[in-house]
Length: 407
Image 1: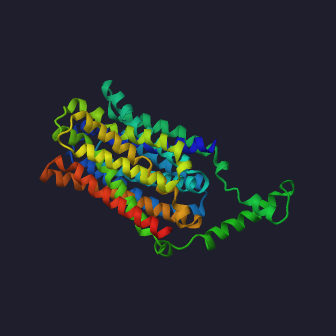
Image 2: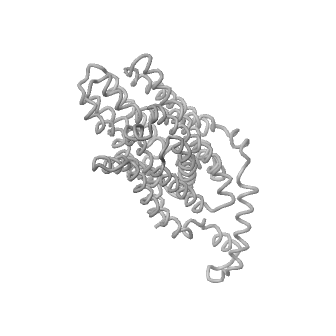
């Protein structure tokens, strides 16, 4: 039951991801906003997400992880309802703040919870459900826009869908409780049938005190752990590559490959499709081959995709296949590196480091795709594949250094 809730929460996390891009051509006219304002809204969102992920370690010391996830979903719901009522771009800026804060909380806490309590299979599958939500968002928005309705209705409907997920998280809060107390009591010689509520209460106080005072280190000591900086670089480089591919694939296909703007929207979804299919597949094999080999395999497949995208003499169908293969290769890298966090740095450090790693990833998402847009304005979108390759090489170097550090 809890796994179902975790999967559903990641669907709720993914649903808003594609709404802004899908609706912006219409929203930009309705709100009388310059085209570049979509980038400002996105930057505000990512800034809130970075702040939120860094705070999750402190929050989970004071509050059970299930309540932090529920609070994050509540903020996402509030922002989606706010977007549905926004009449100016300034209100869009306002509502981007709770969306970023809520998304970061849900993302960081669930990633750590699965890394500590479940296998690599479920880490890949939970990210697959994010991909399903991210693909569904544009289809929901397109349904309303194609039907002659407004983008406001798309945001409102998505918010209502997340309300159902929020209700499921709230109704299953008892399932989130760590199963440390019965084991602690049994270690003291008590049988399960002899454990009283008073025993549980006392032991819960012990567990919480140990967690806050002894097990969880202060942030500066976490940053000094061997290999942490390489892990941060790996997440930054990976999300820089993935974010650039997702945001600029359609523009590359139109301006470099000459594919018509009318048909390119469907083709640009190939990266998402590759990601989702890859994470479904990775869930079946990750437990058998291990985290490290899974990351290496993903990097090799991603390289093949970049090569197909970058060779100018290949037919368009091979370029499109390259986008799907790039998504397929990227699929296991993020969730598998995240799942390996407790093994690399210790379970007691994992929540702090999950937050730090995700903040590094979000910095890449916030800064690097706009950097590509600026460079493409000078040199053209033909630099798409070489730009991706630079961050691919950075990712490989960081992963190799990380593996050596934690060996």
